Length: 445
Image 1: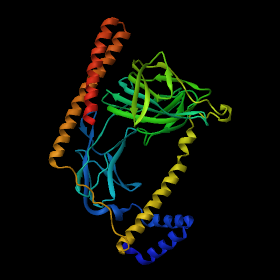
Image 2 (image 1 turned 120 degrees about the horizontal axis):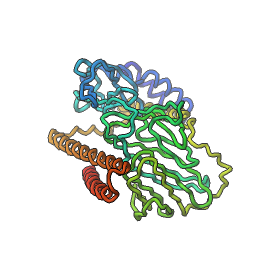
Image 3 (image 1 turned 90 degrees about the horizontal axis):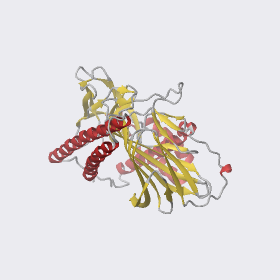
Image 4 (image 1 turned 120 degrees about the vertical axis):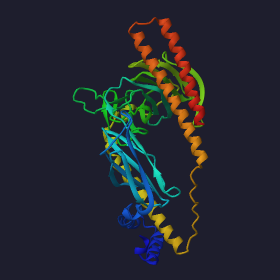
């Protein structure tokens, strides 16, 4: 598209803007640039690239015909839906004649029964023909086959001036069902039948992170509910929030909404935790920072835990000066402000790149960009395939052991087995499960 414009006048104008330092004028100019240089058909089409694949129903193990999949293109920080394709009788889709531009990446996605599914992002620079298969699952509202393998509550820091703790929670789910759990946010009958996360009293400034992209969340009871899908196998969800405190301690309530194998409660070493429900495990390092670790295991559904966080700096302001907003839906809906800032930054970066490209073409600046690294060799792909097969084997063993744990819990709750037999079998099963988890951890290093 640069050939459609005269580069010399464009360069002179950009030089004037940079010298003047007129941020407002630059923003106006960038908006103009953005209108004539979007991620458009002129940038993603006309090459030798091709993205193709098969849409499979992982629940029925059958290809899916007549489904509409969407090709999304991304360039820098911007992305857009480029085109759609309808799968044929064999579930196949095809997006030909795509650009090989190294600045572009492609992904295929579909929303099926209210769950989002997407391939990894692909570059067509070194390998112009790429297969990207997509697997979807039938949806269910039954959460009985879901468990939390590990839950982590991390107190990241404290702000004594504002009387708040900054907290992150991470949940590693295992869905033993062959269907995706997809909840509903319909609250007409009380708490929505959806993925639910309790929060301690007074929690506010909730920021949803991993696992929630493309989904909604609403305030519900003492926490929040989301219509995010939990796919068969492993899923991870995380979010951050703040919780106010007074004095130099905080009572932190935690409720296991799903059967939970392990929970880790971590606080900076200048703090400590008193809890009849957890065992202190000493100091561990997380992201190069030391934390005191407290651990609890084998939590049944709806089990309530209490952690008293002590050693906090004395609050310097009255909590009455800080209104407790709880879970603010407005904080989610007002993301347009943040998005606007991000878009403006993206536009600035885009304009800088355009100006730089023009300067390079005019010989005013050397192109110092490094060439993209080539893909792995065939030998590397074979090794990767072997690793994936080994991981699949571990997944199957882990699912079987988790199912065995859940069945043991049910049998014990129904008084079908004695306590001694229950504890003996459960300890053996947990030991085998931990072995598998250690193997996975070692393989990921």
